[in-house]
Length: 356
Image (cartoon, rainbow, N blue to C red; front, top):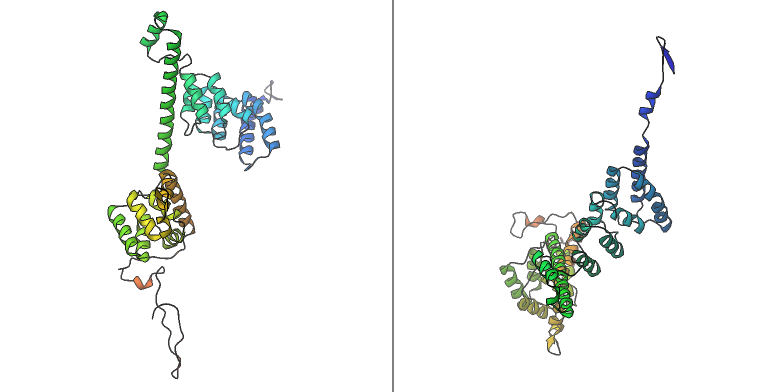
């Protein structure tokens, strides 16, 4: 407090520089969330401590801070169940991103949110990339709680003339409608999962020309030419192809050819030609048919994608040139014949491996 021309002036303006109470809680909330996110594998004590600190800070913060905390925790793989349930029960403007993206939400928590909250929360959960059968059943029950059809005219007919249908018929129709809706939701979930997997894959189906070359080289037993054609189809290096062909069980080659969408007849013929033991018959089928019949195309593409990505990470910095290139002799991936000069005085040349 000081005096200016007879007037007493206070220094209360300094309080403007101090964070307000609400703003202080927002800062502490985000700091708490950031500290928890930095824990790679939180212990049980960390989870318990964060759960105890989070609720009072979250409820005392502003809507914008709550929204930012929910968005940050939606990317965290480890979130305590009480914290996940608290965020999921918030208004949809805050909980939407957490319900749609968080992988830390258990099926029990999702089902509880579906049954306790409104249609907006159920819609956000329905947009998740993967849903378990129990969550799908909860969504069906929330969408059609009384087992009635979604069309207004059917509801009016049911209410207006309840005596026209017997009670067993009503129950049977209700069960049929619920089962139909449940099947549609499961189908949509599977289609979305397959489309996401196909979009993430970078594998191009094999062309007709390369398919014919693989069959031809397998028939004639030209394993070198077969490996080069396979490398071209996979757009991979020789190390990966060599590892695939050295698997005498034929499983890695079958996985690669299924991922390339090679026709079934050609696939069986190639496997039996390169690995004769797969031509043995077991009952009414061959070992090759039994091996390929148990494989899933989606899983095969995912496995081949993982192999190709691993090869890209571990690939040596060697420059590869086409076979007909002008500087083919400088190719680091080709084997060349090493010439050994004879010693002076008519000494015999040293013996080396490979063809002379």
